[in-house]
Image (cartoon, rainbow, N blue to C red; front, top):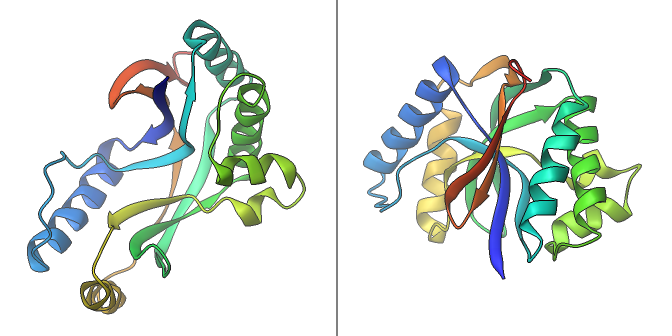
Length: 184
């Protein structure tokens, strides 16, 4: 089966700022990546299905239910266990609901990862189980992780509001389908 992701890719000023921050951290701490940097928020983590037509249909159906979905970018954070440093995302209630609606539909015919399954099971506490973020650096060795965490504490914290303009359905690292909330 094929791997899919559902994500929001940043645009405009936010995209430039997060991309520059990521490049600067990568350069300063000698992190080499072969991938092009695309600042994004993962809404549904890797999952698989053999019903792609239904996936596209449900993706579009859920997106059509929502107007522009707002969220906030505020400061930095880190996942200690997986050694990821990130820009913190504070989701709106609509962002959490949109994600839940997607998961509720997908669980019927997709193989979801454990984080997403736990989100479905903990409907009321979902905002506590889902930690949206924008990765700056990941899969770090412990020493580099600590240094990057200290470094981001010393630079200006990002703080602004943003909206989901487009949501993207990714298949094997390529855009399969994209929904534009402005153009509907």
